[in-house]
Length: 361
Image 1 (spheres, one colour):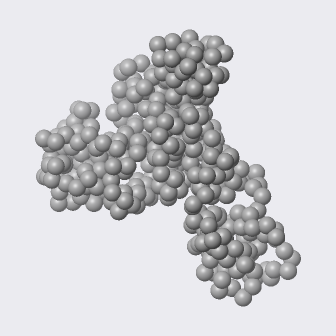
Image 2 (cartoon, rainbow, N blue to C red):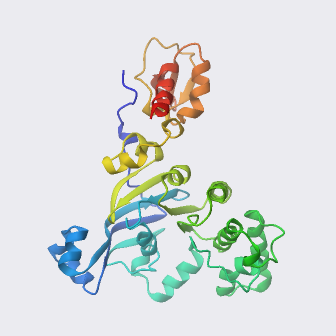
């Protein structure tokens, strides 16, 4: 008896979080070759050389190689990989902080890569906000003025920007610290100021480039929870860069895993853990507590006529750990459903098999 179901078409990792007009961010065929002849290399077969071969032959480095993906409105899309994988280069290409060598980036249909300087500046000011590892706060300005700085640059009145800044200070849990200076705050509090500043502009997309890497583990966990809470409250589309798999699994609706500037896999957290694309991803996920990530569709068995119609019904997308108590307390097998359709069956043995396997590991 198999402990994991074979992926159905619906379970197969997808590159798109939406289709048609239901796309917040659309990236197609994005390349970045660092060096003075990057554009010319794109027109030759040299672009197909490996990163190492191209550098040895031409002195140029491939930062990003033919990357394509979509992000749906309201999605938390995580890009992860080890140092040198290209993830930070990628997030900078999305707003042209680095100019791409080839490819297109569209934000709600607007072509970022084709914009003139004026349009690009306006897009950065109004539609996209970024949060970096280094907070970039102005040391001589109080919290309230740091939060409202982007609105000041946009030319909004002092009254309006202070009202908005105060709302964002309250939202990120810094009420009472409005008149403090950055050096009077802890690292976690400073990053909250950075979050408030990013949210103050009311952007369509928030981009995070390893924002919590410099924080100690406890504060980092608190900030991850803060991002989850803020996402639930404001519903912003988020692109989050990290090298930490636990962080990716905790935050991401979908995860893009990179290696050497290329996409290795895109999938939901349970897809990445249950069906790794290759040994690289498998090694990444080998220590993950499976019951905390896998959904029932990965551990259920095929439907059985022996299971009563009134047996407890559990959604196929429910996390194994969350469903464990119901299954273990049941007097027999439980039905696994997708909407109104019964798609599988699960019992205490199926649950325990996952738990025992991760404890043995």
